[in-house]
Amino acid sequence: MCIVIRKAEVKDCPGIFDLITELAIHEKHQDQMKISLEKFREDGFGDNTKFQCFVAECEENDTLRLIGYVIYFNTYSTWQGKCIHMEDIYVVPEYRSKGIGSKLIGSVCKVADLQNCGRVQFIVRDSNKSAMKFYKHQGAIDLTEVQEWHLFRLTSDAIEKVAAKYD
Amino acid sequence: MPIVVREALQTDCQGIMDLIMELAVYEKMEDQVKMKIETLQEDGFGNEKYFKCFVAERLENGASKLIGYALYYYIYSTWEGKCIYMEDFYVSPEYRGKGVGSRLMGSVCKIAVEKKCARVHFAVLGWNKSSIDYYKRQGAIDLTEVEDWHLFRLTGSALEKMAAKSDTV
Image (cartoon, rainbow over all chains, first blue to last red; front, side, top):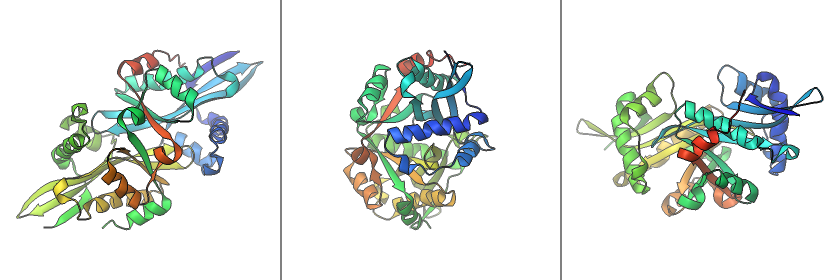
């Protein structure tokens, strides 16, 4: 069994989309998935890409299968400049504890290094104790715990109401 | 005293830098500001633009001064597609209570509507009760409170150590 971490290609889209759906089910939010495979393909591999992706690919018995992925994009800090946000990181359960997650995150951190991005940020649910423990073990700081940062969201109805105040 | 809300220009960068420092002082984190005006100019108005910005400008007796700003960029949700992250949102204290903040935030939300962004995200400090109340009044949801989301950061030596684990082909 050989596992390779590499940049995602357009042909990987169906495999990545399956893993995104698995992650949504794992987080019990599959009803919140509104994006189609076609839109995902266009957003990642079209003219104006909105994210980047690394995949973990397993070769077993002459078959290739995607068993993990990480999706990230550039963000900006007015204090530090260019940063990276890691939106999704997922390894299928039967391939965990083999260092694949670390290698996927490591790939993103290597990009951060190359691009002079001072920060890689991501969000984790407090109830996901194993993930929280893993990230803290890697030296990540829980900014919500340490500095009291709260993540807020405006969704469609609220966005439209606030937009109506624009002149 | 007219106050205009408009898209930022490169010439606004010094005024925006001053407000970035004011906001950092307000958040009690001014020692973390490493930004230089040349970097802000290049990153916002150079060949590759990493952010967009609206400013609130006060015009009085032929002089103008920036008294607020909202800086944002596009992010991506694998569930909903393109979204917006509002990185900074600030109005100088003496100009609050006049609806300037609503106009700035409204500008960002108008972009979200035009660009079909399903979400606008931003972060607020838990002790900042007046801001939290304001955002909740606008219909914003505290995802940390309601869904337990925590914001994590890898930086410095921890970032370097993680990068060393990469063996990407």
